[in-house]
Length: 211
Ligand code: CO
Image 1 (cartoon, rainbow, N blue to C red):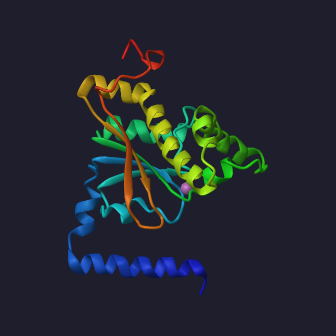
Image 2 (cartoon, rainbow, N blue to C red):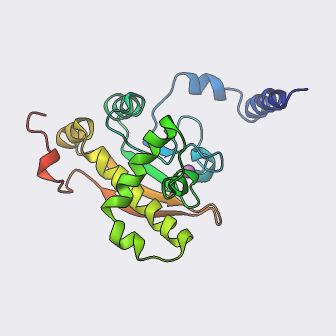
């Protein structure tokens, strides 16, 4: 038996269990996708969006990447965002980071992770640069990483607000609300750290006039 066979076997057991509890479960889900939430989280295997929020299939639309970054040239993320906001009409977009994030820690070192990872992590270094004084003042490396994790989440939420996708939805129907959260690996608790909605002023430099 291969390690992946466990996944396939557990999947069969799960499907059988769901059917036993509710014979129409899959039939209903097949025709229904109306999630209220878009989750932009870290790829870290310890932060499964639905498990830690107690949400069920159909309730949360998910995008995950290393250190939950919102990058304006990331066609993957932008497609997910546009689909969730314009077509699924989600009410909330949540960027959820987590303490102990390997991506955040890696970006705080001078290690050469080679081309592609260096490119990705540079976005986090840019967040560090914006808050360098505040971060450098913290002696404890762990504490400094924790603050950078919170500042990173806040920055990524602001990146969302800079997109015409969000600005157009804010203008036309006053949604979605944007949230920046940080999950604690050590206690399982999510801490909300930042919020923006259609009434939050944004830097005029990033505002579109022809929405
Ligand atoms: Co992470």
